[in-house]
Structure formats: C-alpha cells, structure tokens
Amino acid sequence: MNKNLQISIVQSDIKWENIDKNLDYHYSLIENLKNQTDIIVLPEMFTTGFSLNAEKLAETMDGKAVKWLMNTAKTLSSVITGSIIIKDNENYYNRMIWAQPDGKLYFYDKRHLFRMAGEHKHYSFGNEKTIFNYKGWNISPLVCYDLRFPVWSRNKQDYDIAIYIANWPITRAEAWKTLLMARAMENQAFIVGVNRCGIDGMKLNYSGDSRIISPDGKIISSCEEFKEQVITTSIEYEFLTNLKQCFPVQLDSDNFEIL
Image (cartoon, rainbow, N blue to C red; front, top):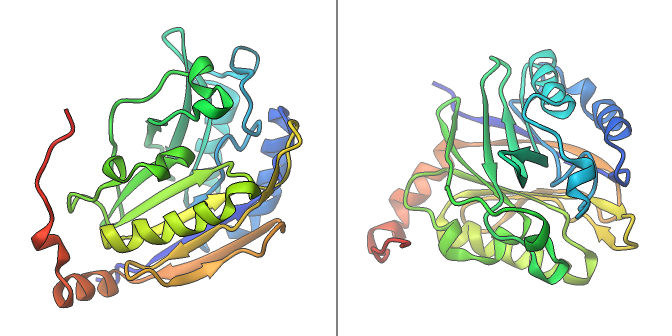
C-alpha cells in the first residue's frame, strides 16, 4: 500500500478580525486543490489573526467557521486544519480544528498560552494531547508557543507527523526555524510548520517561513519569506520507517510521565 501523503501548507496574510473576509480569502487560496492533496494546513487563528478580543470574535462549535471547515473539507476531498477562537462552556480556547472529508471532526486546544502577549488572561489552556489518524499516519496537532516546550511535543512513538500552526512574528523568526528543525530530529518525525505572513492589526510583522522538515532535520519544502503562498509536498512513510531502523534513537529514550 502506498502510504505517501500529500500535504499543502498555506502561508497567508490574515485579515485582521474579519471572519467573513478571511473565510472567502482562504477559500480563494485553496480552491484549486480539489482532489490534489490529502491535508491542507492553515495558520493559527486564520479567521481573525492573533487577537485577544475573544468575547467579540469567538464562535461555538456549530458556528460559521467550523461549518466552513467541514464544507470545504468535503468539497475539496481533503482534510483541512487551522485554529480559530472558540467559546465552549463559558471558556475561550485557541482551538485547532481538524475537519475530514468524511464529515468527522476533531480538535486540539492550545496548551501553552503566550503570556508575553497576555494570551493566558483571555483564553483557557488545553490539557489533553491529541493524536489524529489519517490514511495510516499518526499526526500530532500543536499550536505556536507549544513549539518551545519539548516535553509536551515529545514523541512517545505515537506520531509520525507533528503539525505546528502559528502567528510567529519576524522578531523571533530564527527561533521558529531552529526549533522546528530540532523537533524533527529529536522526535524522528516529519514536522509541518505553518506561519502567517504580513502585518497584523497590532502592527506585528510576520515573515512566514512556513516549511516541511524531514525526520532527519532536512528542509523538504519551504515558502518564500513575506509571500502569500501555497505549497504541496509529498512525504514518504518508507523514509520514516527506514530511518528508525537504521538510526533507532527511540530505543534509548528516557521513560517518564507528565504529572
């Protein structure tokens, strides 16, 4: 069985706090991917930009953005994932939605909230790690600041791909690029990093630097800096299994649990 996977990364210039405009804009970027890819990855808070205005912008799980994700997944015959602001049981979450073309819907709530911007004052943190399974691949969803925490990102041989979506400013772009590469090598997994580009409503500048990295730390594909771009890349499951057989660092990993 061919277990190669086509992944499309979307580096977009998100329109500030304008949900309707962003839904139309992102559809225009990906509509030509119908039947051309397996997974489409959008940035963090792709409907609003990284906003702390949760009470105004939050939707419920039956809101327009979630419905858009489900409908788009079905229309394009592809998984589509990205995070949006969700209100759930009177709490607000930076929630990464995973919508499959078969109608199944899963999610992951961002664990590490970026206190330097006050995110922890406006949102509740998630407390559950999640693994999605799609077409024989195990996939770990993670959001932005999660990237800085290797214990939370640790691969206990339960995922093949980790997807990090972000609004990561240019002032810390080197950290973004370096940490993505480190997570690939230390976890022996494919890493997908999708970051926005452009300038947001808080005047923060984003270079993008979206990329896919192989389990040995090599960049397979990357978007140009500051450019709205969609890139589709095929990743090979056989490469991953061969690497683990030839260089089985997982056999020497330390055993511990997060309390």
